Picture 1 (spheres, rainbow, N blue to C red):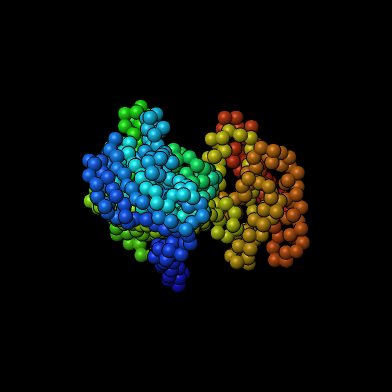
Picture 2 (picture 1 turned 60 degrees about the vertical axis):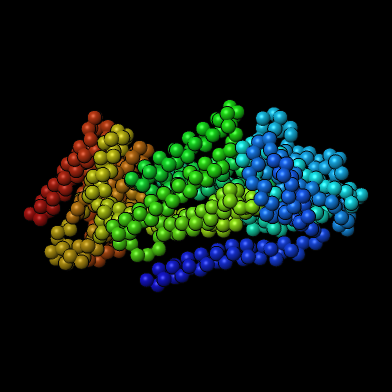
Length: 571
């Protein structure tokens, strides 16, 4: 009971620490970001020209431009003042758009046209453009042209500063998601590397494989969503492919994990969902490469499927959990409890981000440029931590269960007095020998004078006679494949292949040990009759028949001993 109390308290502190860490990162995000030096964010004073050529003056944070489709253009212009930076640059985040930036009608930067012309998805991009030294008083104009249906909505804020400070600001602003993404990505790779070993040596368990995939897809998605992969390798197309590839496969990895954890009816349901998600991903990839529909145009559909699966999974998990708990009347914390908490919290956090994203796209004047993964960041940390703790608990339980099973097996197949194999284990061994048809030898032994010792000295001394003889057998036949007690005063030794050679020598060693023990024993003497038989002596026979042959030879020897004893007594 004390262990369970400590266990529950430790897990409670674990979850509280996770939540505190997550909210600490998110709560202090703005405070650290505002401390960035040599940085300005411009949101006011822009003239915005929409696709229908209407002109408004509004803050970029609430531009109200709506959704920009393929071929539609929106521009924002502003006269630049002196910012006081050395080698100033502007930074603008474009979303699936062709970007042209002008300074007094002179084109100073372009991005995306070459992708669009080759029918390639135009990737998201952090466009960093130097202004030069004589920018003050000139008009800056940024033109954004949609490249697909629902290309983007809203306008990102414009940032001014040195290139290094702009990068520092972005790193600080998204540091929680950045470090979480790096952690999850690295952890996912480690788990995937370890999973084959655990699959081979831990009963073909694949839950660690899918734990690694969940961690890897979540980490990859976070890094790509904030364009960190592009920033590291300078390849926006790779960033886009990894972003949407991981986004599509997050539900797939979840279903795979659930499929590997549950059994029975639940396993069938989650296997069906897993196969469905894999097919949807492959279908969307095929449509993309056949240039029928772009890979990036399924976001709303994917969100709908994910939300539906999320609700269904939570309901099913709770249902199966309650059902199992009622049947098992389980009260203590288990791996299933921890996993249940993690997936529900992650589902709630992801649900919040999905709803917020679609609200910004379709109903807000800000647009998707202001959507962040705050909920997913915290939820991912909680989920992956719960998966690891759940896996740890599962392995502890499995180890204890295996140990318990081993102890039960030992009790079922061990003679309680001598510690040797009991009759059931001996018969099991003989059945195995009969099936394998290999070369072996069986020795049948009978401990003499057990009844006499029991009758004259008592059963305690009789038990000591039996255990002593068991020790002698173990010392003599130390390399035997089986030493067992068939019951009472009957013993058996099984030796396979090369160990069965030269049994006569081993019998001499047995009698040598018996003589040594008799020199030390004062109350009784050890004596045994034996008989042995080789498997080749009973062609096509079972091990039971070989044992019967050895047993008959043992009884012949026993009758000889009894005859000699009777002759001596009459004399």
